[in-house]
Length: 595
Image (cartoon, rainbow, N blue to C red; front, side, top):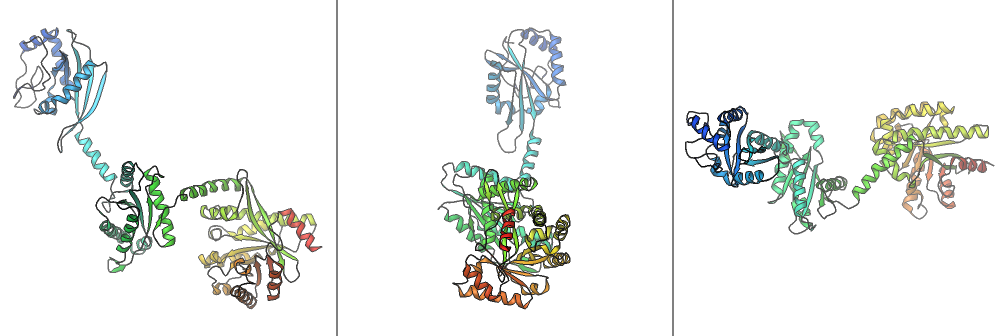
């Protein structure tokens, strides 16, 4: 034998195994190396034969395929290997991967690294996956560098991971990519669109009647509808477009814009036209409409989630407008501002940082103060005054209108009681408090009024609850029960902004309403608009026929006040009389007016 280690060759020749024992573990394996061969190998490495036997026994005891590799004259070669290496590698392994493995082994043996691990896949379709590890061993007696090579077959694990990932990235109902896969597709498009030339767009499609169909016909019909819609949407796409189901009845489409943003609008029109034909579910034919929102990739959205969210913002506007909507910059900032405002408002309510302003209600016949409307005011410590038109919708959307409404009732009652205490008598004025539709649905308004009256020793006639038509129309049965309970407390009921909503006259007849408030949109320009003055006359006549009082909002001139008084309006409210006042100024205004 040569005094050099054999070159890297896991299989020496056909029918010969690897390593000094040359055993592959089956009936075709050649016989083990004879003792005289071990003696020759031992003399080459400078080791006793029993040491080689111990080493071979150790290799065979390992649960993985392994071999001891040595470096001689710059070339790696096998010193010893166990049977499992033949079982894992097979006879073709060295011939196909010699160059790659030999190069890595040589680089590792010549380096000072202690360990190296990498993943290796056999070339071709369906070939196996291995984890290959090199671990440095102490040099041989002849100072040759050595390492332990091990192979772990990961094929089953990789295939399982691929199967799980395929399931994770696809919708089980339609077979379409799901939200996660769509997100990855958009991310890839962003990378491809690094120049920011609007070469891609994202459409979000939402079915407008899906929830009703699902509730009325069952989940099976709902699933059938989703599958049918997915097929129709797929038919509208071009090659290269991506359709995904984002969840529920919401679909996402990634479009390549070959001819600019107009392509996105054309795709939206194709989508809308595909819903023109009714969808057959069981024995029924049902028309399904959709809302489509669009967001363009123009460099302003850095991440896929941002672009998809922008398209969803546009889709929500499309539900209201009934047409395709394109995302406008600033919508996300406005939404974030609303959430920030919600947080600040919650803290302001908890810390009692809000206040009430009181706008006088003037008896147009006697020119005396009949009462005040209590209006919530918020002066933010950092941002200054925040108008009610900004924070009241946030309160209604978030549910904060319930604690805000309770606070307004309590603060109004406390103010009236304080006025009585300071003047030493029960003042002949009342205060109107606005009640939101959300508050009417979610809170026990009558209990809140009773608590505020009882805590401050007030009679129910000192409070007037002002509700809009929408608050009553949204749930007329509940509204009727609440209004009846309020009347039992002797509180009065006013319908605010009358004439701007549904104006259902049947509710005026059935519900215990005391006052109709004529909206300022009819009052402000009535002297120059014959239609407005006709509407005001009609409301005044209707209120008189039903035995109700009236209050006109938005009186800003003496001519308006005199005209409304001549027409028979009971009470007036507006800047002509006074702007909303603080509690102290309102009391001073009341006393001065009565003097």
